[in-house]
Image 1 (cartoon, rainbow, N blue to C red):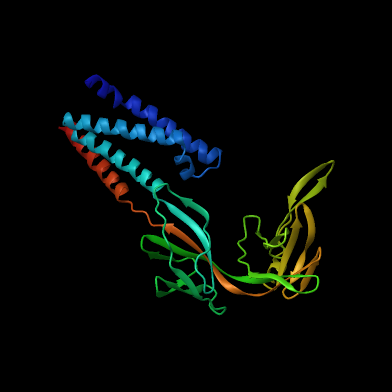
Image 2: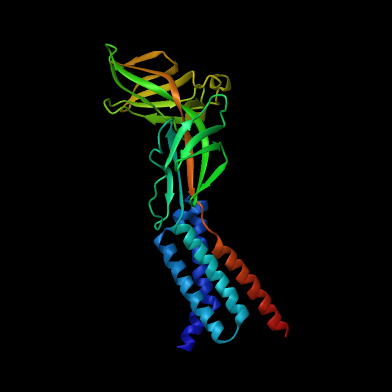
Length: 317
């Protein structure tokens, strides 16, 4: 049994478990483009992490029985650091949501949630957003009035709340060829990396892509005998009219029904339907993150420093 414990807690076994872990994170993040949390959720990574924790625990117990307290503290420090990573993976939460005037949070998007994070409700309502104060808004959070500034974090019950943008949600009105309104709604334009936002009315098959006027787009151009995809630079002059003018692309399947810049209040027609957008209502994008504790990290660093000092002193003696 002693030989088994000695072998299981040897540096060779620890290195044999640690090296695949490091390679998984490097390959997953830097080669495959996955986030560290996604890599941490892989079965092989969790297996190696559990095995490494078990081996380090055996080693710490063996060092304590041999009265090698410095080396034991170093090992306990490594265990604490690994447990901090496990805690951060399991209890993490990060997401974004849109909140309209007089409304609560929409569905979360761009969400990352750990397997042990419990569901929670966010009692927040947007009560005011003024054009003369474009970087601040007023919310009712847990029945208390709070003023939030764009980019600044407001802590609340273990969560970090940050307003990332304060925008206007245009009112889109869909009508038939006779002018009778079919549907209408304030659309929160959550632009993606390509600068487009997508929405669709429930009663029609058309998808409506919205972008800022003059937004840089990818087009195909012929260079010599080959066609290559090029990005057209954004038109900054046109983008100054954002809010007054939007670029609308209406698609039905793969068929383009409409594609042009549209002024606020103007009506466009496509396939027997009419669409216009009017002045909208304010909305905010809120980033919600769980505020993690770092006690295990601090304890691990402290244990490793103490253990290293004790090991150095013992060798000097």
